[in-house]
Structure formats: structure tokens, C-alpha cells
Image (cartoon, rainbow, N blue to C red; front, side, top):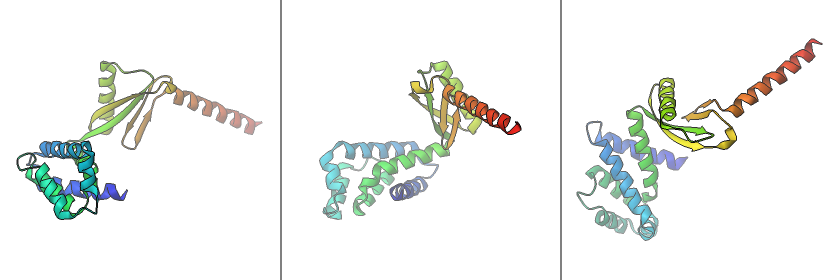
Length: 188
């Protein structure tokens, strides 16, 4: 949790420095690219994430790997700051927090949709539209197939869960029947 909070602070600071007039999309792509470069090279990642390596050496490596012109200057400065403070390990979380903030600015919310079978494009669009109306935001869907729900749809948007699965409907019927049995027993 602490890592996420610290990462969010860095992302918010970068977001504020670039401002809504700046190219926030490019900054997000640059953060992702820098994160992939570091994650993709185990030896580079190890050197940048090892506290035993002096900050001046980590900084020199970051400056060499991410030369001027490759990244937005603000992103490059953030990478240098992370290297100086031994926090390069936070870069993937910072990139995700920045992307989340950008989606929030654009009123786009991610939603996970679980179905028993893959959705066809028409149903996918209908579900996205319905969830958009329910949340008041544009929805991007991530789909997952789970045959155990038998039929229907379970959608998660943030902390909201819309459970229209056949399994849940059967559970509700069972609960109502059980409640009806206990009600009938009380009347007797």
C-alpha cells in the first residue's frame, strides 16, 4: 500500500508539471516505454534497483540510456530523480498511476466483464453502453470467460459489482425459498 501511495504522488506531481495543456498522452507512453526498457533488461534493472550502487552511477546510467530527445524532458527528469533517490523500482507503479489519472481526467473507467462464453461485438458494445449509462463515464471493457457462472454477465466497475449471472439468480431464488420456509414455519 505504501508503494502505491508513493507511486501515486510521483505520478500526480508529473501530471501537474506537464499540466492539461501539455502532451499527457506522450508522457504516459514515455513512462511505459521507460518501464519496459528497464524491466526488459535484467542487468540494467538490477543495477538501477540496487542500493549499493552509488546514486551518481545510477544517474549516469539513466542519463545515458534515456538521452535527450528520447523522452519528454519531464519524464527524463523524473527518471533521474528516481535514480538519485533509489526509487527506480517504483517506475511500473508510477506509470500505472499516471495512466489511471489520465483515464480519470478523460472520464474513462475500466470494467471487467465475466461471461460464461465469449461475447460477440454487438453484445460487448451493448454492455459497455449500459455500464457507461450506469456510471456516467466512458467504459473500457476487459473480458474474462468463466463457465462456472453458467450464463448471464458479472461486471465490475471499480468497487461496483453488477451480478446478472445465472448462478447468482439461482442463489437468490434459493434464499427467497428458504426465507419463505422460515416465514411459513413462524406462522404455524
